[in-house]
Image (cartoon, rainbow, N blue to C red; front, side, top):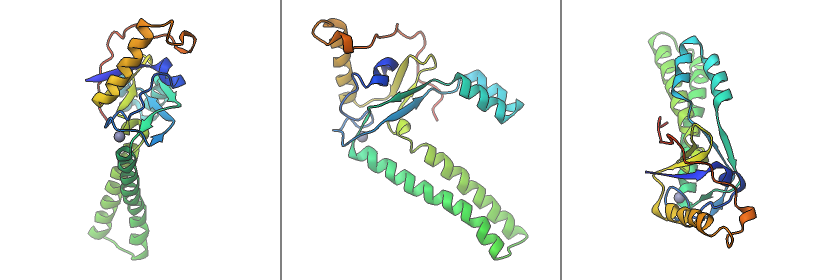
Amino acid sequence: MQTLIPASWAAVGHGIPSVCSRHGLAATLRARTRFESAPAGWTYALIPLGLLAFLIVRAVTRHVVDAPVWHYCDRCRSRRRRQRVGFGLLTAVGFAIPVAAMASAADGPVASLLTAAAVIALIVGYIGLVRARWEVIAQARVTRDGQWIAVRDPAPEFDAEFTAAMTAAVTGPQQYAPAATPAVPAAPASAHWSSPR
Ligand SMILES: [Zn+2]
């Protein structure tokens, strides 16, 4: 299940629920959040041509919505803090291992083992730090057409609050500050959640 929020609303902070999208709890932090779209499936076919080609096409085709308002609860914040500290330490260990290996003049199988350990620590640490971004904590990303922010498995409280804002915008434009309500784009043809990270 997902909730679709018009990108035009998110970009100006309109209709964003006051609870967090992951837990539905009262917000204790309001943070600017940058949402991105997932790479289109075909762009992965460029990886054999080189990572650079993939990254360039990815950068050109990516949709980004910079939301000035998104809410997070205490659990969201501690989750982010834990991830940043844990994976940050792991990344630091990944950098420290080669230095320690050189200092102790390790060689042969010990050196190979240390190199493998360092590479694994760096990869896992990097992925963990990427997953600590607010966008991932919020469980949301921009749809491929750039028109919506899709919140995956939103908390019922979040969904209910957004649905109420949406209903108010559709049914009562005269009472609901029409000038401040950005236009809602046409329904998405295929806005489904895919390619989880
Ligand atoms: Zn939360």
